[in-house]
Length: 409
Image (cartoon, rainbow, N blue to C red; front, side, top):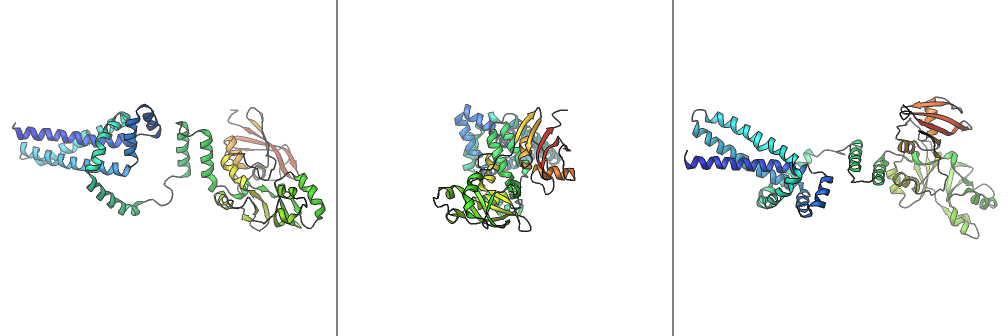
């Protein structure tokens, strides 16, 4: 075996090692999850900084690895072909294709990637020392490659969201389990995501619970009625609730020695019952309260900025100063619940999936499930729970008991 052959064999082994390096590097870097990176930063700040600097530019990293791996694999294939033809003049071409392919797949790709996956934390900081200078060495080729891929990117870019809401919430749950998000942060982010799915009708104060002043009545009675209302805002209407003419700022009205409606009056603002909460949140930058109208233009209820914010932050805001719907534990796996509570809140608190077409609140859901006007003592069941009617008023459910069934099984 002459010196040339020995040199070529050494070169083949070196190129194979380089191919393995690029394959292992790709797997090692892209298998590092946020929690692992955080732990690495605590134990090895300098090494973590090197890795983080590379991962912040994933396109640059991929381009560098692709260029390096392509150069090495092409050189390895050419050198292996030359060796095979010299050693086996008659069958060298066939042997080179089979042998080089098998060697590259096993020792240049599959095995190194497996090693990179198993030892990502150990390899990434070390390989970063080599990748950083290679990024600058391949700069001209890398920039050319990146510009070409960017030019073609619009033809392959997915339209709309790349993750469904359920998939994104799964990512959030994993982040919570790994300690990246705490429980409050998780709940708030999920609430923001679901704003697009919730409508004004889901969070409004329904018409039957509204308190207002009829402008056709004697104004002399308004002061006493305003004080008794214990609300921050009252509806101002004429004749009936479908003729809303504005809102009364109760605080401003009571602080005015003359108790003039004009000084404390706010102009009416109307929103459809199916308005998304995300849209309402934007509209409430300049307003605090709105009348919710149904498909026929009648008053369905009132929604405040606080109602929308409560869906994100929990029960903090309460601009109408309305009493909270009752939600009280009544024993193991049982709760007393105001039937006016929203289905969204019930589902969130008890991890249920109650829903019915046209029903936003528990009372409406009970009626839809029963198929008739419910009476005291009636019970309806849904997957995971039983709801018993404890109290009704004028053919309307006002109080119910919810019992979780799977907890009893």
